[in-house]
Image 1: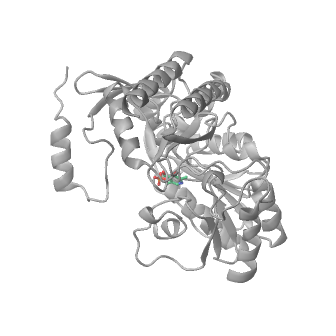
Image 2: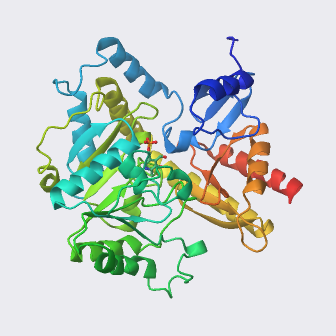
Image 3: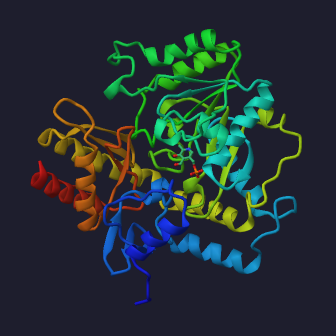
Length: 429
Ligand code: PLP
């Protein structure tokens, strides 16, 4: 086996050479050295089932041979020229995105990260609407740049002491802990209705756009009621504001549909995508209708955006999803996993809520009084890691177990993770 420096040395170097804002999971983290579809391997040869996919990135599996072969062929041929020159992969990928995205979304701008895609989506909305007021949802997460951080509604990710103005936050559709203290459906979607009050009282009356994740990822997999986005869109249409949907974490078959917003029967005006589009290659995009896109005429280029290698990955990802029926697998394995978690919730009250669509499922850990139980969750995650299962974590209280595995997982993988979780829960609670 190759010589690896090991987890302790990585942590030492990290302390010395990496900015301390970058944390890491686990009290005793492994050093990952290899990936193979839904599995990861550490420096000691231990095998793990990856149930987090690098935060919804590796939808097609680690080092997927079909995608890797195409990347290798491209990298040997032409790696980079910048998108101010003509190459064909990025226009072919844009054409494919126009085909697979909802409604009239047609024209793309390629960049490298989710943050950049959202920054661009917000810029495009400002250009089209000639207004830079935005509405965002509490507990949403959209990125690290000044504007995308300012539009992020989770305190722990808002490190900028001087955020951008003109941004207003609406209550998020978090039914388990309704920020308005209501119960669905008796609430009549008051969280959505509040957006109208916000527009009337806190903006010029014509904000450029509302940005939202269709399912809030970092917030702890918060799934809105079915008719939430329809109501939101009606309100936005009334005031001429655009709907920007951030599919960075939810896109590319994860929820059993190509994009999560399709579960809510609403067509966004602008959509941002990243993460799973490249299956590990850095590529992102924002895409809009031709009418909106055609107002972005002043020069705009991204050195690495849509580079031949990352666009090759994007094309291969779209082919792999279609040819291997990943949407169907996300639905079936998602249902299996959710049913198993719901059964565990009945047995172990430490699990207060189970929610999600397809293979994006959260299990919220709570104390008897419903207060968040992050330490208990950390203990469970650590023990599962030691048993060979990598599971994510989110939630404003850092108390939501996040299942966002590669979409290639099989029935036995789900059985195995449920059995392991049951064993850990029975030992600890
Ligand atoms: N939007 C959402 C919904 C995300 O989950 C993230 C990152 O996790 C981002 C945007 C930022 O993406 P990136 O880290 O690629 O800049």
